[in-house]
Image (cartoon, rainbow, N blue to C red; front, side):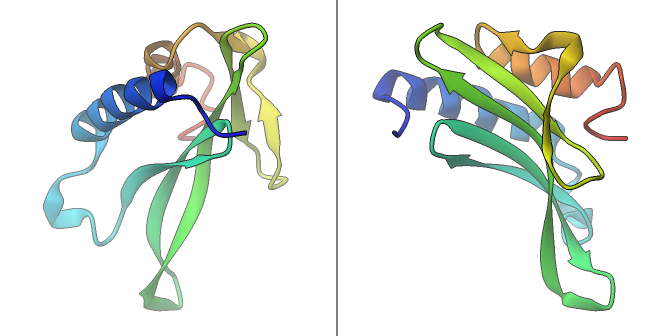
Amino acid sequence: MALGFENEIEIIEVMEGYLINSRPPEEVRNKVDINYKIVGQSIIVFEIRPVWNNPSKKMESNVAKATFTKTVNKWKIYWFKSDMKWHIYKPNEKVNNLKEFVKIIEEDKHCCFWG
């Protein structure tokens, strides 16, 4: 099931604002950058870097995920662990809106998202 129209407006406002404030300077974005994508009910924040042995190719590394749960009207937060699986972010499993999600991944108090 795709996100509803009201969620799409929130996603655009919050996530585009996040990118404006958090992306690295334009002159280094060919070496490291961040972006997000919508996959079903989830928003995935990921890092983009050149492949180490073939810099002409880019690779995406997952950082954080927020999944909307309509029944409780909340976003569940996940982090991508070294075992290559999504894990619920135990310090703060759910938030009411994407602004709270963005604040949590920016602060990264437990070094789960950015290391």
